[in-house]
Length: 334
Image (cartoon, rainbow, N blue to C red; front, top):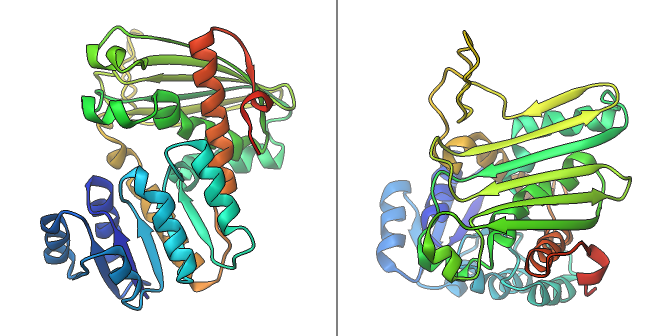
């Protein structure tokens, strides 16, 4: 099949490399506002360069991958749907929840599949965790712990436009908790602090946060996030039930150092970036998209899924600023 890619920045170029290695993909058509980025991708992966999103959609593509700036997501999703082309779009659907809801309303009833990029759903560990929960082998759940720690904060310009740590970073934890447990979040309480980069504080954001989520069956989920983890990129989940407990990410590249006498675990080189930690998951995610394009499976992560994680982020942001518990019902607008 022929796949278009809109946006050749860090993640777009990474997706181009991944797609070029998939058996189902015969050719790529790429476009980026910066001509040099598109030319570089064309040189590396033998892609055809188009001068606009409209030109990519008119180039006979079977599916399109949106990896452009967040502000462009709504218009590009709608353009692909209007052209009848299945679309994969990196999260978020839009910069604001209002815009995201508008996109959902605009595409409802249209027979064009849309997949939103939440790559943890395709990581082998999280897939196994979901299977363990759904099989009942853990018994009734009582506690979930989810962690995302970045090795260093992104640049000030990124922070200024990110919407805040809950919308930008924690939203991955929120999505994977829903997906693994099969439950919805009812209420949140969030806290945050700044003990690192001054520009994060100046942007009105926090660099380290914690959130307590109460799920609709009473399970408690504890979320820990930080922009600062000198040892590496740390993504983990613990799931505790009355019959058993399991962990995702407890492996030799875990960026954590044990100080127990005689303990050498973890012994590997720590993960240092999200592309390192989730290389296989990104490949599985885009492989799934080719199956969506081929019509052999439904979208594994819909706009509705993405918005549900977004409402949790909105509730946590409000909780942080007002120092109080917030229900999802309080922030939901659809």
